[in-house]
Length: 263
Image (cartoon, rainbow, N blue to C red; front, side, top):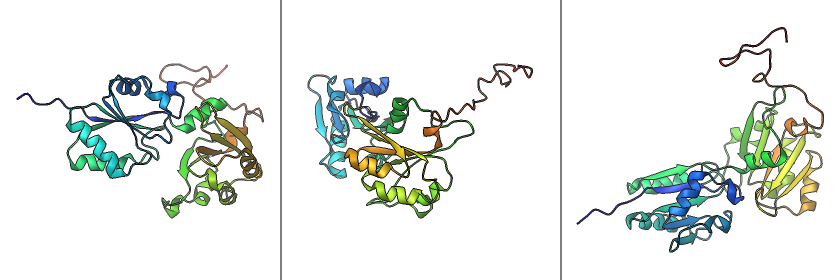
């Protein structure tokens, strides 16, 4: 009897919401999939419109880890091409490690296809560089402690002390506490941007400062599916910040160009 051909389970980053912000590889895998298990609370169903006829689709929003694993395992064992479709990039707050651990226990192969995270979609929407010369060269991605704890060394107070560009996921529902804790490291007039469902048709961007952003967010009604971004880079354009990178400086030499010190 001929052995059944099996394909690795594919963890695919769906991007932030815009169906065109999935990678070419991710889109191809969705089109080829026989079984798609998607995070229905966060992944738009429009990403499933190009699935092939007869493909099984399962919304994992109400499923436990074990129930989700069963779908991946059974699909793999049946010879189906299985896609686990996650929002944004699977490696960032995607809870994929625990899923991969269960697959490892049963020697089921898998692959991970990266996706566009909300922070980069938000930066694109704003036309904003997150690492500006002489303003900030460090980007910190974090979240507040909730039901999922955060190490004490990674508290918002500790991270705020660096004064870097800081992006906070999964915390907008506690915006007042976020502001209170960030105030230990950032001045009151530090620019803050809250980006809600960026990439979706109803996306919304709220701008303010550390001093007034909590009130602006409350007025907007945003309570979930938003990231909080803070740092001087978000106000550099308003202050007409003119510091340039060395990459394209005509006086700067590198492996592909000789600079002219007299320019």
